[in-house]
Structure formats: structure tokens, C-alpha cells
Amino acid sequence: MSKIVSTSIPYVNAKPHIGHALEYVETDAYVRHLRLQGEDVLFITGTDDNALKNVQAAQTAGVPVQTFVDTHAEEFRKLCTDLGIDEHVFVRTSGNEAHTKTAQAIWEACNKKGDLIKKIYSGYYCVGCEEFKTEKDLIDGECPLHRGKPLELVEEENYFFTLGKYQAQLEKLISDDTIRIVPTSRKNEMLSFIRGGLEDFSVSRSVARAHGWGIPVPGDESQIMYVWFDALINYLTGTGFPDTSTWAEATERTHFVGKDITRFHAIYWPAMLLSSGVELPTTLFSHGFITSGGQKMSKTIGNVISPDELITKYGTEATRYLLLRHVHPTEDTDVTWDRLDEWYTANLVNGLGNLVSRVMKLAEEHLETPVILSSDDTHSEAQWGNHLLKFEFSAAMDIVFEHIAKGDEYMTASEPYKKIKTEEGKERALSDITKLVHHIAKLATHLKPFMPETAQAMLRTIAENKKPENLFPRLP
Ligand code: MSP
Image (cartoon, rainbow, N blue to C red):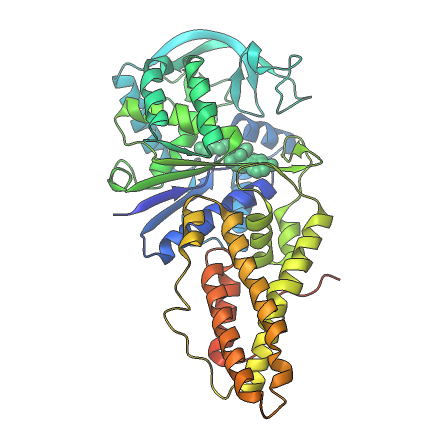
């Protein structure tokens, strides 16, 4: 029995930004933790190719849409590699027959159930959100998330999904945690949204408005599926649905999503699944935003810190560290280069890197053979594991860094570097150095889901009984 864990699939209208990197590393740390516990995990990620905003961006760039989305999708794939994302399935929603087949199968199942009705609709569409907005969503006639971007007035005949039918069922599923939403504040927000009344939502658009781009509605040549309808289905495509029963049989189906798209995953997606008779997600983890100067960092707004810059400056492992420890998992976090530099230097250069290098230098110089590790060294703390299972990444990391501080304190208090030079202190110093090496091994165990290469490097230096290469170079 496997577990399924996914990231959301980003739009590919521009290069990846730090928010995408955050979601990748959070999901990866969780997946790695499960895998280290011996779980079989199917990790799904990919790209959302069929959005109108992708079409518009391609037009602006003067490039055919498929070429444009292919180029950008590669950048997201590369980012997964550059961030050290563990083994995963990468689902593209365009140029992918399997996805078209899955999306059309779900469409047909919803249609058979009588949940898709065609009607004329008139409303304001926000291309930034890829969503129709109602009066109550707007502030001064603008989308609050995409101020300055004009809304498109649309009037056309579309298919609508009868969401209202599922209101009571969705309310129950979320309130009794059949679909567990973390954190509770988001769960409550979803419940109050549902209690406010669920309206039918448009699930298709005219071929003309879609510029002929997207998944065709089966049996109606005039319509293309609404991008969210097909995008959510990527999670099924990633499991080989409908040709496999992986999705149905999984013991856990967890989606990592940002707070802005929790509603699509907590309400639209389960409703589509209920309609088509497919198993529901078990968990939604809704992360906060990385902001810059108090504003959401977004491609549409244009205030983006690129993950490439982060990786170039700090390296893969430190980038993972910075995102997992210093970005609050569920609240918004404001990030600046100054703060990132400070965290890097204080905690990695002077903290972890310095401790490992001091301990292993002593070990290399004074221990004749490598320290043999015991099962205690590879045993992780229950509280740390609980934090990880609750998506409390920074709290789990804090435990590791408390142990780094304890290692430093032990070194300072026991002074093995001084005692080793005296006849009476030598034996005690050797035992303290050995103790500290075990401590480093234990740190490595707890760092594995977060900083896998660093953890490996630490274990390697222990096995070779050698001081490591500079793990975290000082910033220039
Ligand atoms: N394509 C949709 C998702 C479809 S999933 C079936 C989408 N794409 S996105 O590129 O706009 O966002 C992808 C993910 O990045 C979302 O979870 C979103 O919340 C997250 N982030 C976008 N900006 C972010 C920040 N500034 N900070 C943290 N995460 C952010 O939505």
C-alpha cells in the first residue's frame, strides 16, 4: 500500500519563483521522511500548461504556445533537480495523451452523474487567478491579489458544475477531518466558505476564448475544459488513473498547496471526485506565502526573488535549509537578502558547519579508527518525527539546531582540544571526542529529510574519520 503526496502544479507563464521552491522543498522533506520510515510513496509534481495566462504570455513573447510552455516546464523540472527533489513523477498537462484521457474520463463521469449543465454566464474573469470573480471578491473593482490587472468581462455559454449539490457533504467531510486540512485556521476558512453557500462554477470556456488551447470537452467541439478542472486531475494522471488503482488503494493522499489555492483543493476537487465516484484526498497542507516588502511574491506582480539566485548564492542544501527553517510553514514570511545572509552565516557557517568541522578535526587527529555508529545514532526523536508528520518543518529543524547548540556547549565545557594535550586529561578527551562524533551522527539522522546531501557528507566524514571539506563557505 502506498502513499501519494503531491505539490500543486505551477503555471508556466514565467520562470519559477521562490514560492514554488518553498512548496517543492516542503513536500520533499515530508516525502523523504516517510520514505526513511520505510513507506512506499508516490511523489507527484508537474506543470499546469493549459492556463489562459500561459497563452497570453506566449502571445506576448511571440512564441507558439506549445513551444513556450515546453521551455518553461523544463525550468520547473530543472528546479526540482537543482533543489535535490527526491524521485517523483512529473506530470505535464499539455502534449500528454494520458492526461487528456484521464481528464476526459472524469468529465464524462461527472456528466453521467448529471453534474455538468450548460448555461449562459456573464462575469468578470481574473486571468491572474484563472477564476471568475463575484462582486464580493473585488476591492475597488479589482482582484485583491492582482491589483492593477484589468478583469476580463466574459459573457458566453459554458458548462457549469453543480457544486451546490455537494455543500452538505463537503461540510461534513471537512469538519470531521475525513479530508484533514492543516492548519486549522484554513480548515475553518474553508468551512465558513462552504457555509456561505456554494455556487455552481464554470468548468469550460469557448474554444475562441481559450484560443484553442487546453483539453477538449468530450462530445462538444465548441468547448475547452476550464484550466482548474483539468489541472486538478493531474493528481490522478500521475497515478496512471484510470488504468491503475493506485489512487484508490493509497492509504494517504496528501496535497501540498499554497493558501491561495486551498479552496480549489478543499472544495472543487473533492466535489469533482464525489461526482465521479473516485476516492477523496485525505490531507491538504496549506502553506503560507513568502512575501517581499509585505506583498505576495508573484510572477504577475513582478517582485520575485529567483530560486536560481538563491541556489547560486547559498547552494542547494543551504537553500533547502533557509526555506524549511526560516519560512513559517503556515504563516506568511517576509524574506530579504539581508535576512537570508544572516541566517546562513549564523546557523550554517558558524553553527552546523563549524561544529562538524571542529569535532571531525579532533577525531581525525586523535582517534585511531573511525567511530562505529550504533542503532542509537540512527534513531530519531519522536517529537521531531511528530513535527514532520504535522508539517511543522521549522519546529522539527529547531530541534536539530538545539542539538547543535548543545554540541557546542559540550565542546566548550569539556574542552577536549585542551585536555588531549595533557597526560591526565587524554583519556577523558578521547571519550568526549567519541561522544561528540556520535552527536554529529545523530544530527545527520535528523537532517536527512531536510538536507540529505549534508547528512550524507557528515556520515561520510565519520566513516572516513576525516575532517570534511568546507560544508558551508563564508559569503564573500
Ligand atoms: N497552477 C495553479 C495550481 C494548480 S494545482 C492543480 C497555481 N499555480 S501557481 O504557479 O500560481 O502557484 C503554484 C504554487 O505556488 C501554489 O501552491 C501557490 O500558492 C504557490 N505560491 C505562489 N506564490 C507564492 C508565494 N509568494 N509564496 C509561497 N507560495 C506561493 O496556482
